[in-house]
Image (spheres, one colour):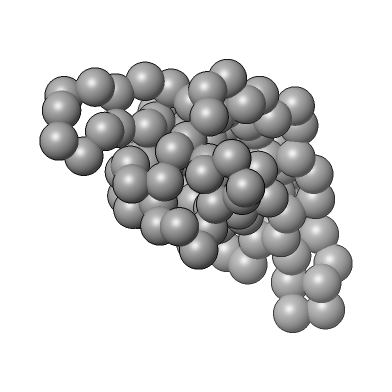
Length: 127
């Protein structure tokens, strides 16, 4: 399997409903909750790509473009954007959808860097 096929196969999509217990006093999704969901999606994507133990080492510029109201559905899409020797980058976008209309727009985007590690938590080559 070539790199492009491996990237396509590891693409990860997760859907979540935004409930009031995950929102702030503005009735929109907490930024920290959005980042947690993004990191989880990125981790799953990185692991599906490498099939190795992966750890998050950084998150790059996370852009909050639109608020995500309670009572909406979010779709998180993770895709490998770069592969190095021991690390890879995963871009994650969050799209917000209204439950009862066709409305859908990108709300948040960011990039996460992961490193493959062995049982001693030392960096190893991505296979």
